[in-house]
Amino acid sequence: MTMPLDLPPVTTRFQLGPEITEEQKRFLDHYGFLHFERVATAAEIAMIAAELDRIQATWIAEGRRFVFGIPLFYGKDPDGKPFLQRFAFTSVFSDAVRQFVRDPRFEPVRKLIGADARIGDAEKDGVVVNRYVNVPGSAYPRLGWHTDGLRDIFYGRMPVQMLNIGLHLDDCTADNGGLRILPGSHTQGFWDTCFRKLYFLSHAADPNEIVVETNAGDLTVHDGRLWHRVARSTRAGWPSLRRSMYVPYLTGPFEPKSDASATPPYHHLGRLIRWTKGARAPQLPQK
Image (cartoon, rainbow, N blue to C red; front, side, top):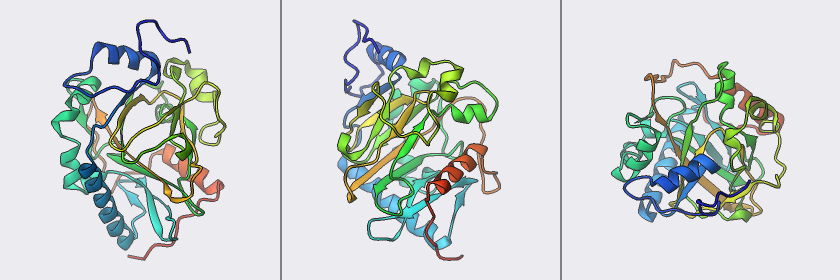
């Protein structure tokens, strides 16, 4: 897409300050994403990783397959052990993560969503953590092209702006897969939102895609209506590990989930796609 004369290059990395600048807002409106450098410290990343290991151990011991109706995706780690690859509602099960995502440094991002935006700890899918690893038996070695507007389409409505706030826990260059986006595709019409790519099944590189290469601690904001994918790493085993945490900033009615909540239709589709690709959950201990 054409770069406006008054915007920096699409590869620009910003610094997160006390407020989102006008230039950053125009960049987001035009390209559909922002990339902020080194927002979290190494100690904070280590804390989050330790909390994920603790939660995983608890859920595996419980044989848990769902959290508040949202399926948990287990694969295998490079040592052949069960490996939880998509955590849902993480901050409900970790006081440390709950406090971290409320740190004042994230206030400019919250206000970007809306003055009354809240963190949806127990709404939607909650604070989600994805862990990609390229090994046999992995349920998440990559993720095909999609927009998050599919969620709205399932509910019979046109996609609206939903900003995804991602904290990246690992250094991730292009050879390690990483987030690939089509800049500007968030402004497309209904037809392209539905049919420009084959949802989740298409993995082919697009000549217009860019790679968002991140360092551990970087934060990205991207419009969920963008077409995006996560490519497979060229590495194998633990060096291919890529972890990212997504924080839901929500407005509108408060809609909390509970263990009695039903599984949303779009998650049934995701489970079916993984099944057709041969992703099988490892056996977990029985409760």
